[in-house]
Amino acid sequence: MKRLAGVAVVLGAIGLVTAFALWRLPSNDYLVIPDVAKPLQSRVDVQGGHADAKGDVYYVDVYVRRIRLLERLLPFVQPDGATLVPAETLAPAGTTDEERRQQSAAEMNRSEQIASVVALRTLGYDAVAKPRGVLVTSVASDAPAAKVLDPDDVIVAADGAPVLTPTELRSRIGRHEPGDRVRLTVRRSGKPIDVTVRTIPSPEDASRAIIGILVDQDAKIRLPIDVGIDLGSVGGPSAGLPFALEIARQLGRNVTHGCRIAATGELALNGTVLPIGGIAQKTIGARRAHVDYFVVPVGANAQGARENAHGLPVIPVDSFQQALRKLTTSRLKC
Image (tube, rainbow, N blue to C red; front, top):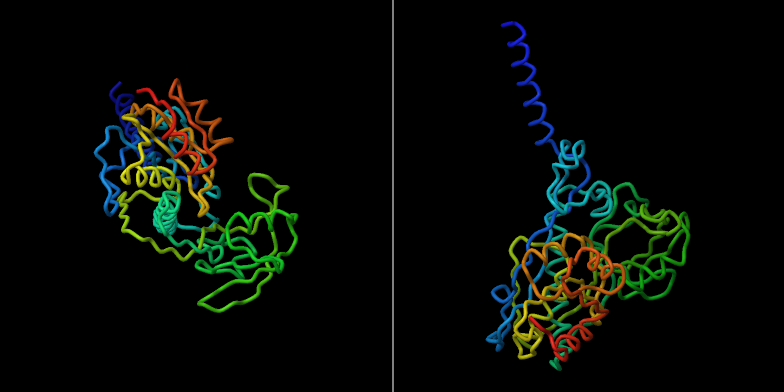
């Protein structure tokens, strides 16, 4: 009996060590986990602005970390509301976690600038925003593009046609099929060079051609007043819309009517609200903050938000201008 008891103790210890190891060891893919929406008032400082009105604009973030082996084997131990996301949907193949964090921080910085210029121009300020091309932020190490493109390259033409925005570049590449070659003109260290890139199938839709890069807007921006935004370690481009709404609020536009308004959406230079990832988790985060309304991009994002809203009113918008108009003219109840 003593021997059996000893064996049981040893096996139990081995099981605990194994479980601990499986919990600590990360896997290749990621979990996207809800975070609670937070107010922006103390995070945004607009020269000459004030925020005395009741109500708040909230931003919504998510936690992103590598899934642990135990969580992959036993999904029920994953955090509530988490979703498993393949690594290649967040960053090109070969990207390290540190590179992904740096890229996310750079996206946030550009998002702050674009939100500031969009908000100020919409409010009638003389803010300058001149698109200068498509900034390459990351290149998949296993894509043909890795041989000819580098991070910080700026793509200014595709197949001989000028491309000044990411939308224009995606449109040009979308005319091709996987395996086709695309001629690109790139500005590198201030000098133009021509390269040819072979397209590859999108991991999400094998019939759609991509070139295996992540991009952002390159633009010359000049603001007539100072706008300071600081979310600490939060990264990514999806807080552009709430940034712009908070800037408008501090400059006297009644966007909240005393309510708590959460928002998410990347902004293009013309004010278009672009779709974002993690909409289910962000909707959960908005609910957990007990906000009164959730402003989201139209289309699939709005549908995903409604599926997870559980009674939270969802307001879909296609541009900052539309969001501002809806919020300032609607009779919001809270």
